Structures are given as C-alpha cells and as structure tokens.
Length: 289
Image (spheres, one colour):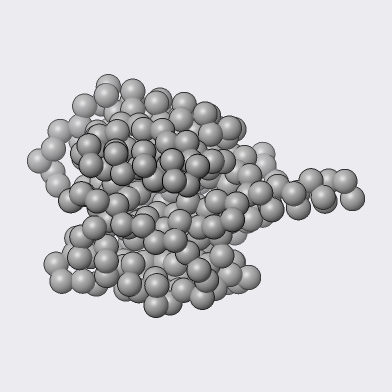
C-alpha cells in the first residue's frame, strides 16, 4: 500500500527518473550516418565532447542514466529515440524506418531487461515502419507524424499498445518538405500543471502546429521559437529543467532565457552542432521516463 501511494505521488508531480542514452558516439558516424546533407563534415572528437556534455546535463536533471551498448558499425545508434517509445513504464520497441538501424532495437531490448518495464515489440515486416522521433507525447495525448520513416501500420501499433491515450496522426506532406521527423520541428515540456508545446517558425512548422491545434482534445500552451532554424524548437525537459541548444542565434538563446523566467524553469544550454550535421536533434539522443 505504501509503495502504491509513492508511485501515485510520483505520477502526480511528474517525476522523470531515467534517461536512456548510447554509451558512445560510434566511430562510423561521420562517414556512414544517414543525413539529408552530405556536404557537412562531422568532427568526431567534438561530437563526443558534446555527447558527454549532453549526458551530464541529463544527470543535472536528476535522471539516472541507462546506457545502451552500441557497436561502432552502427553509425546512427547514438539516436536512441527512434528505437523505443516508453510511456507510463510501458515500452514499444520499434521497427525503424531505415533497415540499417534494425539491430539497434536488440541492444535497446537488452538495456530494458533489468528494469521493470512492460515491453512490446513490433513485428519485423518490410514496409511496417515506426521511428520514435515521429511521436510527440504531451502527457495527455499522442501525436504521430506520418513520414518517410513512419507508416500507418506503425501508428496502429502505438494505438494498440498505448490504447488509454488518444492517438492523432499528423500529415507531414507539405510542399517541398524534407523534414525527417515530426519532432524535427517541435517538442513538448510536460510540467506539473501544464504542457508547453514548442514549434519552429517556418511555414511547415506552422502547418504541423495548426494540425495539432485542430486535432487536440486538451488544452496546451503553444510557443513559437524565433529564428530560421526549426530544430531549435526541439528541447529536452525533465524535472524543472529545460535543455536547449547553445549553438543557436542570440535571439533564440534570449528567448529561452526569458521563457524560463516566466515559467520558472531552469534553462541549460548544450552544444549540438556536430550531430545536427547528420540531422540529430536534442531529443534524438535520449529516451526519458
């Protein structure tokens, strides 16, 4: 009975306890990681420094780190978000939208075995894809982008596993959009008394925000992050601390500093410039629960 009330108390004040991360930046990332722009060269040493800073920031958020073993040949394996979705201590191991990433889910499953998490797995079937980067959980509802990496059948798995939440499909088709994931242009901070949704300022990000506003059954605070880089709206939040990108324009950093003061949030900045060259956003590198 005492344990029950402790768990209930944790849920009420939305304490996040764990962050899953890769144990290293694979040496194959600069040459083999998937990306939309092949012209930018990744400095592996800087990328590793940034990843260490990122993990330290998660620790500063009072999160216990769970490391996933990732082999050097798995170039994209630092982006653990795509391989698993965890909500309310229930995990769904995905079938990532690129075949080169399939083995990453086996290592993720091993990492989850020592924790009390109910785990489901997608069937490994050609063209039945789901990337965790396409799922936005608001604490009340789930929004999933129908993208190049996530198909309708993948969304059906989410509806089945997390059937106590409303699941909404977001159409990612928009003019000449080349955005990889839904959360490439948005993210969410689930506070004790409210959820704040962050969006980039492009026409595509507005297209996504308008769909969410129309489909949502709940009330949220909608925030548009200034600047011309939608990925700056991708933040990581846990336990009163908001992680944002240091490698942003001053207008963006000033915006988040003011935003933190208004909402009584601690703002921490980290550098994501190297992983951004291979389409990596802040949420890509961890799974928090």
